[in-house]
Image (cartoon, rainbow over all chains, first blue to last red; front, side):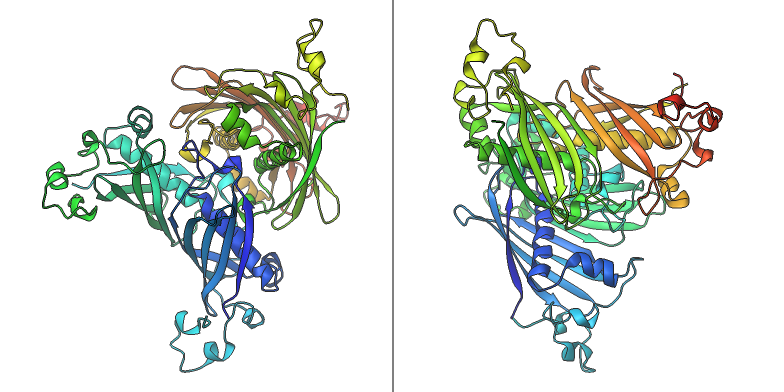
Amino acid sequence: MKPSAETRIRVRYAETDQMGVVYYANYLVWMEVGRVELCRACGFNYRDMEQDDGVLLAVAEANCRYSSPARFDDEVIVKTWIEEAGGRMVKFAYEMRLAADDRKLATGFTRHIFLTRELRPTRLPPKYFSMFGIDARRTAAPISTGTAHSACPTP
Amino acid sequence: MKPSAETRIRVRYAETDQMGVVYYANYLVWMEVGRVELCRACGFNYRDMEQDDGVLLAVAEANCRYSSPARFDDEVIVKTWIEEAGGRMVKFAYEMRLAADDRKLATGFTRHIFLTRELRPTRLPPKYFSMFGIDARRTAAPISTGTAHSACPTP
Amino acid sequence: MKPSAETRIRVRYAETDQMGVVYYANYLVWMEVGRVELCRACGFNYRDMEQDDGVLLAVAEANCRYSSPARFDDEVIVKTWIEEAGGRMVKFAYEMRLAADDRKLATGFTRHIFLTRELRPTRLPPKYFSMFGIDARRTAAPISTGTAHSACPTP
Amino acid sequence: MKPSAETRIRVRYAETDQMGVVYYANYLVWMEVGRVELCRACGFNYRDMEQDDGVLLAVAEANCRYSSPARFDDEVIVKTWIEEAGGRMVKFAYEMRLAADDRKLATGFTRHIFLTRELRPTRLPPKYFSMFGIDARRTAAPISTGTAHSACPTP
């Protein structure tokens, strides 16, 4: 099962721009809110993973496609799920909809690599594998292709 | 000739996060700074285009690949160029480098459509065609495929 | 009775800086969230006041005293109340506390004037007086000093 | 002599809100840009002070009075100076004006205390005293009143 979570955000005045709609970079902030809530829904705290295990989720790529503008005071539902995950990377996907009428606002994804506090690449500690939906056997298997995709949880 | 421009940005404390590096959404803000400066370098003012002609550049898609982190007080060079442009859309591309050692920080692109003040799709007024590097004949030609790509300026 | 409201905010990663705590300007964004929620609690929608009545609440002054830092993922309670209100201005006050242990994070205030869409000073429409806790008789009274303070609701 | 510096900022689209002017919290970001540039003008690098000496400038209070709105693409001049400084605190003051016509946009101040990396209060290392315009003799003198003001550089 692909872990997923929904979180609700109320659009802040600060997030709008002079076009009268939400400034495009703020959708990436909402994605962050979405994936932190997904972590919580999966049974772990992103803050603790950073503090206790020294594992940081650095963004390697971000993408967002904007369908319809969000406006001040709108309630937005951010649906977040893990699209791929392995010992070295994780890819989150997002869909943002207006709570009022279910209109699609945007879709996107972020690809992350795991880093140490010194910002060097590392592997996700095995204790988090199940939470990220990673199949530990496939990740460790000698016949693994070694790419992140091979370790991706099947939906 | 593909219009391009370079602009320099000093990283603000506000733009960092607790990882000690620039928060990923802020690169999209720098892209905005880059394309506004590109407009200026091309001989027109983005603000005037909005105010006088009522043409808005709405973002349809944004993408950023992060190579190396930027830090507080770093000087960053944002290189911006138009990768595609037509009467209905424009695609900007970006490359961000550290001024100190030319290290690549990130690359990305944004795709935009032209909107009226009421946020309805419109066409770019012809007077801006040359500034965006659009070949007016091809855009108007009956054999035009009508896609944005067909009107894209040749590098 | 002094209208007041409490709203809860979860600290975003985007709101932290490299000191590992929330960047100081973000408390002003939280104040905005607080006063929008206070408006809602008072029975009106700030967005509607802007859209339907063309009355904007422009900030004339903002102040914040920082007592203790907030951190990523902390839950913060923003208490907002109207400290003064009249036909020409309103002053909101704020207290931000950590939900976990009630520790005080910051206190502050914002003073606002009412503007038209063209950003010219105007008076608050009387229909909003009671919601802002304004005593209409005192505001209209010929012996009124005419200052905002004279029209301020008594606690 | 009171150390002061001027720095120029071009208003970003990201900094505007749906009122069509700069969102009020962003002035605090500009203040940060101003004081970092003031440090540079005074001959030291704020980043190095944090990294090499482990001294952080935490904000204890911020205040801003807004006179006239700034708009997208405006060039703003931020004048920053040290209003008070002692071994335990420093107070910066700011004036923001429009480059085009010298119109005053806002004035404000920020009060800071010095913290260690562990966010505990500390004293400014004496090597920075002259840069902050602190008179070392008065700071150390037994007849010092002990208040920050007594150590304030005379204009």
